[in-house]
Image (cartoon, rainbow, N blue to C red):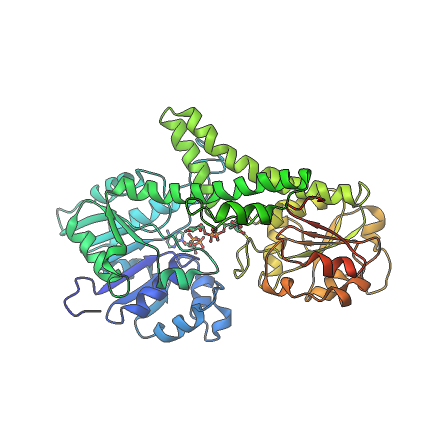
Length: 479
Ligand code: UDX
Ligand code: ADP
């Protein structure tokens, strides 16, 4: 960091999937700026401070190395929210903004109670001039609310002033460190040129100037929602075509390649799968839908809502298809679920397609052996709303649960033990290790006739079939 930089001390409120990695990279690239990430969740902060870097609360390739370099030097994790805000020149708000579950806008609007609480704490604790940066994805015009709260502070006794900026984060989980180190663009929205320059100066330490885009506050907030809506729309589009491919004998991978070579369409984000998950896409589109209705644009709202409806449909469709292929019933049958995270290279399960698909199968009375290399089994219990049972003894035959039709699940430490005795395997996350499975040794472990349902298109169907198994691959029709 150049010594004439305006910002010496940064506080980031929220040590989650966005705040943690983003601040780690800022601290790494700006060694002269003190960066403190605060959170009210003590366990999370303790995990960020854990000497064993494999225990960090967020799994991201490359994150451990960045944290190791900066932690204790100019990167700190703390629960001292108030003190850290008081001594900061710049405060990032990076807290959770889930979809509201009740009240006005329930099911669509973002729940801004944590953002509001933060703004109130900042209003109370800040000293001198503080630049407040919205990092969480927020509905358009949230900055207005933040500004109103900051503006209501009684500054007669002490000199406090604020500038509010919007600086949405475009990182994708699993590639967070790469995305942060080499972003397509950095977006800074605001009204105060000096504040914008101060934040731009931080990013200029490693991002070329032409990639730093300056906009007004509302454009910045809306750009984030729109980027996510466009990306999600591509996935729903390709998944809708996948269903048509299965019905007609086309192959969605061939179609994706054919259309992706059109430079106007481009090859990225055209992988058909079990539908999108993650903390952003569904939430942000629903937010957009809510905003459109609020601003009297019901047709625009319906247009975007269909992207989410198609996604949910795809997940139910896959569960339904599994049941149909297994003679119309999975009651008491053992199914191996490979992958629970919403995508590879993350331990995050928020909105993971596996949740809806597994719930549908449990509803049918299935017995699920779930394997995921990074997801904590306790998280799976919470997501499925069902406590894990003991893995059945090998060769013990049908379990008591199976005979009574009771739905159960248990965590499997490895792929082979998940697959042993199973009638079907469902691949729901594209972990690299699932691409490399040796089906000649796995196939004999299954009860025949057995199926592999590859919702991510990662297996080689010929190899699976040569093991005597039936294969269904997303988007592949019988030619
Ligand atoms: C997304 C945006 O990419 C990122 O810019 C924003 O900041 C946050 O939301 P993320 O949710 O981490 O990032 O992951 P992303 O890689 O976008 O994947 C989202 C979901 O779409 C995953 O479930 C993934 O499996 C699915 N997906 C993605 C597909 O099904 N097919 C594809 O071709 C790409
Ligand atoms: P994201 O994916 O956007 O980073 P997360 O849910 O992973 O979201 O992280 C948000 C974090 O913000 C959580 O660890 C939560 O404890 C923290 N948080 C929420 N409200 C506050 C607050 N008022 N003060 C400090 N931390 C907060």
